[in-house]
Length: 308
Image (tube, rainbow, N blue to C red):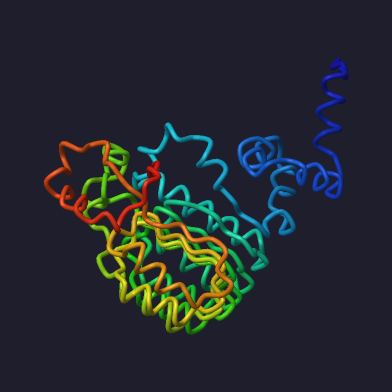
């Protein structure tokens, strides 16, 4: 004859909680806790964890920031497939209601699904995605016209063509982040980011600047750290984006302080400008011959040291 223990009673009660109570519990947990813990409790908890109300936002950024020691693993095909699978699952569970996606290391495969099924998307952050290309970003432009914030930093297979498409079709974008990795002193990335990727740094800074200036007049916040744009590209941005309030040009060594001052003088709403500062590479022995001549141009640099 079997006995009904207190432990059995506790287990039974947890598994038989109503859907509404489970949702109340799950909304109080972090995304990581839901994925790694509650989904594994039992079938009813798994089903509750898939409720569309829990998946309007998919934000992995805090998880990436809390695990810097795992950076090398992030650049592997296996990790990319895992992120892609997570995105596809969340899109399925959200039933098209997702409004915010913040991930890294996804690919065209996942973004194509987002473009097809997430018409209400307002925020998209896809930093460090070596296999995100113009193909999927142009689909995003067509499928996600409500975008307001876009971060495609460190995505080197994206070109000015994506920016053109986004500018034409996503007319609500007010925040754009298109930062590049520190190509002046890549020592902090060596051993983590594949060498071939580091060497593939986009060269068409002015083409991207032209697309921004011509097609994104509504921008309020623009980040272009380590872009290779020149004074010409900066002029195009300043002429087209009259409402800019924040502009980050840190590491943009092809524009001088005078260039920045001249180009932005007509931006009456501009409150914060981050300029290219005086920079001493940590790997000075490697880069001295290549970049040493910059010391001749005092105007190009500021006296406060640029910290990485």
